[in-house]
Length: 196
Image 1 (cartoon, helix red, strand yellow):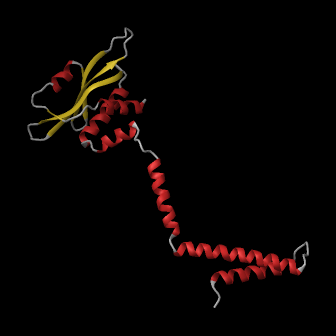
Image 2 (cartoon, helix red, strand yellow; image 1 turned 90 degrees about the vertical axis):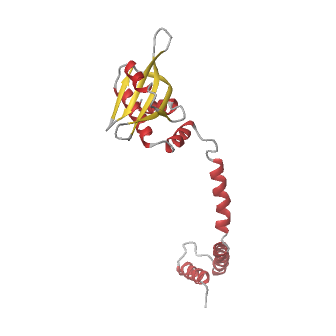
Image 3 (cartoon, rainbow, N blue to C red; image 1 turned 120 degrees about the vertical axis):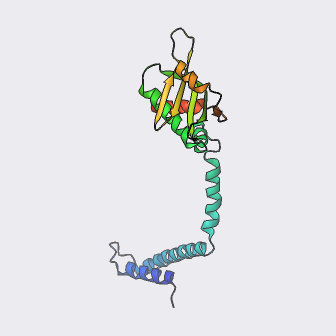
């Protein structure tokens, strides 16, 4: 029984022989040319079949894929790092960061240029639930060159509330506040910058 490659090559030869070539080459030259091409075609099929049987494609692709993964992005960018920190962030804190950035962007009052001492925490309410707060300071652009730092607080309610100035200090200076670790200034800055 003929193998699939032999059947294909035989069919290929019959099609070529059936053609009426315009140059009308001699039959011997045509047959020699056809033998050459059929040999090349059958060797190509045999090579492909061998590669598939021996899983050479897998053995070639695995190191290639590893090389691509190792060389692409070996050092994470600042955005990747902030995204990684956001992934491990508590959902209420992520909500407060987004809400604060949106509020600063939407209200064109004192426009924040930079943030500092931004931290999150919570107080226990009378019904024993946690009310999360985001406290910090922002500076505004001043013509005199001296930065003015304004305190702010963003409070998680059914939505959120944001307070600026002295009122914010009252919300954040309570002894009952339980503070999370870490400064969130850069996370808030990245979110605000992405809105501009």
